[in-house]
Amino acid sequence: MPGARSLADLIISRGARLQIGSTVYDPADPFGKMFFNILASFAEFEADIIRLRTIEGMAGARQRGRLKGRQPKLNGQQRAHLLQLDREGTKTPAGLADLFGVSRATIYRELKKAQEAAA
Image (cartoon, rainbow, N blue to C red; front, side, top):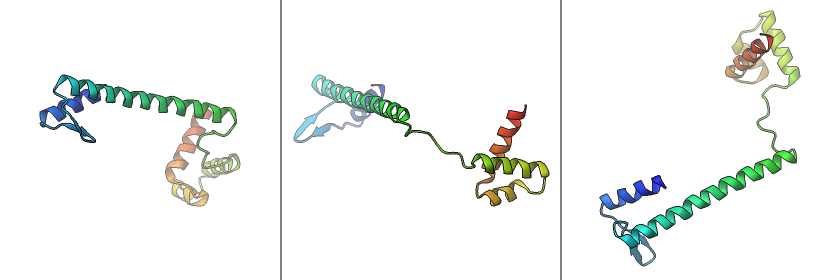
């Protein structure tokens, strides 16, 4: 609730009040402060529930084989071909990127992975 407290302090410093429907709450008086804190607590609770449901949903999807993460840009055959062409030295990284339809960053990343695996 530190974020809610700083928001309440900002409202107070600007002399503003919180209006919900026809009721006006002044975060400087005890009742308004309590109401504001209750709203902040409910908001924090709801955010925690959403986070928990997301984690549970992802775990369930992972168990069902539906959550596999980002698919690699190059399949195994393309990666082997890329490494062979790099060893031959016939193409630049830009040329390899054009050939495989990926960015140069992907080419550099694949080459770095291959170097790390060889080491």
